[in-house]
Amino acid sequence: MLASKKTRRGVIGAVVLAGALAISGFAYTAAATVPATIAGHGTNTVTTPNVSGVAYTLDASDKSILDDVTLTFDGALTTSQHIWLKADASGSWIDCGAAVASVTQVCTAAAGVAVEDIDQIEVTVVQA
Image 1 (cartoon, rainbow, N blue to C red):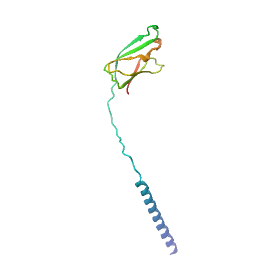
Image 2 (image 1 turned 45 degrees about the horizontal axis):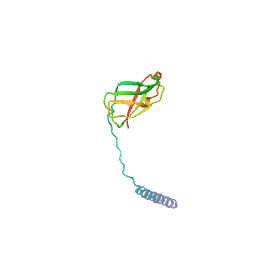
Image 3 (image 1 turned 60 degrees about the vertical axis):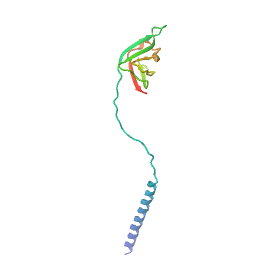
């Protein structure tokens, strides 16, 4: 009989402890607040502006370097778009800046590129 009293006390003690932990855990989680947020997912079509023409303007005093590159696109770009140009496969990207609302875009940042280094033209247009 003595062993069963100890077992009963142990069980009752464990139940009381579990209840206290459950109540205190509830108290902590009930006090948590979560601010209102917005979350979502969506898709959209990405269109690629095609370059239909490239024209090079040479420097007036040194015909071995560029003054600018004029790109003609198949559709007008908008002022919210930004143009990058790469004229040399091993060179750096040239920041041509924001587009103008036109099919013709002049990249004056290409000034100084050596004509002999031009081995490709890569163009990237991104929404700014």
